Image 1: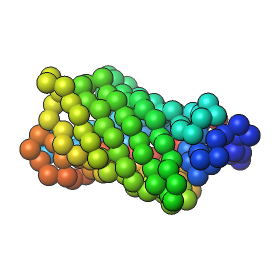
Image 2 (image 1 turned 30 degrees about the vertical axis):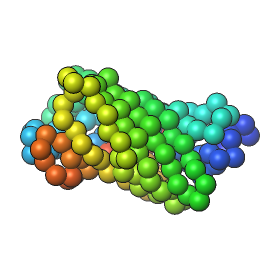
Image 3 (image 1 turned 60 degrees about the horizontal axis):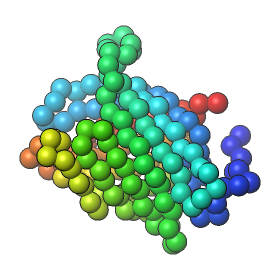
Image 4 (image 1 turned 60 degrees about the vertical axis):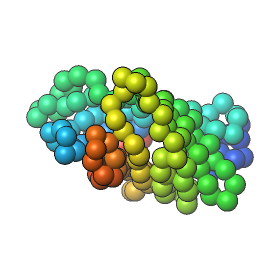
Length: 164
């Protein structure tokens, strides 16, 4: 059973269900790439300030479920705002950063990119939409993306279990 830490900032209580580490499997695809399966580990932490620290690592899986190579890494901060609003700041080593805005409604989060900034060498990526939810104790998420001249459409989804 998950307990809310005593030193969690009051602003972060609505996000407390995310705290800890999560791991599991996902699927990906896009018109510009082949479909694939991946593993992922996600961690949400706090330090008593009014935000959660976030990091995610994923890796490509082969047909037998074995790790093939690293995929995406992202790190950032989740900042709950009054009235169920949420700001998320993410940075990626592939040359882009994002500012996401959205809503938090119990164990359901919906965010959309407000800003996508990228370096000259980064691939073209223009916008995103993400859903997160707690479903039967698992963290489920989905990511729709507009990139490489393609409109916003499904790209990634995963089901992650809490790591004890």
